[in-house]
Structure formats: C-alpha cells, structure tokens
Image 1 (tube, one colour):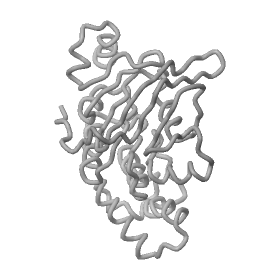
Image 2: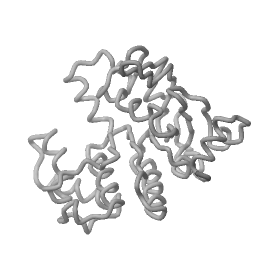
Image 3: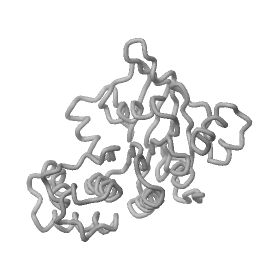
Image 4: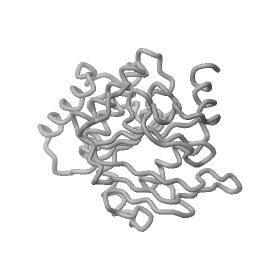
Length: 257
C-alpha cells in the first residue's frame, strides 16, 4: 500500500468541487458531488463503470458543463471561463485519456512534440528535442522515440500518453482509467509511474478508476462513487474498514466476481 505523500499541502486546494449535479436527459449522473484536491495529493475517485467518474473529470476541464454546482480549478471558476481562458487553464491541467489518444501516423517523438509546437510557435527544435527526451526518460521509454504507436504494447502506449501530457508541465494530472485493459504486471508498472510522476514533477492528481489495486497503490485519499455521489472518503484503510454494504459490494466486485 502507498505511503501517504509527505509533501501534500493541506492549506492549498488546487481543485474544489461543491454540490455538483449533471444529468443527460432523465439519466441523473452526478447527484451532489463535493471534492477537494490539495497541492501534491493523489486523490482516487473509485467506482464501477457508469457511476459518473469520467463525467466528473470532463467537467473539471470544461469539456462538459454541470447543471448545478461549482468547480474551482487553480483559483478559477471553470463554469464562468471563456474558451480562451479554458485553453489557458488546460495548459496547466494534464488529461491522460483512457485510450492514450496518440496519433497513429506520427512517431512517438512526433506525438510528444505536437502539443509543444501547437502551444508555442516560437519554440526551437533543440528545446523540443530536450523536452521530449526528458519526458521519455521519465516514463522509461527513451528507446521508442522513432516508433509508431502500432509498434507499442498497450502499457507502452499508456506510458507515452502520460508523457505527452507531462510535456506541457501541468500542475494537475487527471488520469482516466489508467490501468484499464492491462495485464497485472503492466498495471503495477503504471501504478508505480503515477507515483513517480507525483514525486518527480510535484503534480496533484485525480485518478479515475474501478481498479481497487490501482486505488490502493496510488491514492493518498480515496473517494468512492456510487450512483452519482460519494458514499465514503478517506484513506484506503479508513474507507474499506467501514461496515458498509455498498463498500463491501465494491470490494467483492473487484476480487470475487
């Protein structure tokens, strides 16, 4: 189990969510969500598929808008930002997609360079190469720089997706199901990488998962989502030591079914 990060600053909240609601037609997805992410902290949002986890992080970066409630990210009310302000904010919030979202026609190096060149037209080739080398080293895949995504394993694509997110030096990382579809050994590698990113780059992260092992190994704190709201929050032990049928059913969902 992960040891709690000693560098968490409880006095600095980088994401604050209050009373958040979101529906799609008659489907009530989020039903009054409250959540704080502190500087230097990994918060795991844990829940079964379809409970609203991914909707939550899309709202955080303004890809979706809530029906009610507030989302404050790095001191800014996301619901009131213009498109230009949202683009600026997203530079500081890295979104690691479940699919890795790599361009198939580009090499690994070109995939990593793309967001740098898109966001800074004046950046030199030497600067790009140096930053590509740094993030590839961080994810342990320097040797893949000239490979195409199709030549990589699923775990390698996940790592490169994380590297492409890191290359813009975000303050916050959002991971959407980082271990989904991976074998157990590769899951361990991805969990270790998430912790290494937190340590090396001093990021604050929200990790969306239904993988209990991922939650246990990466989370400084856990928030369990059930039917669009949090039913338990705290450390892993605090959450899973409770005599709560909903929590027990989730444990069984991971390890029995």
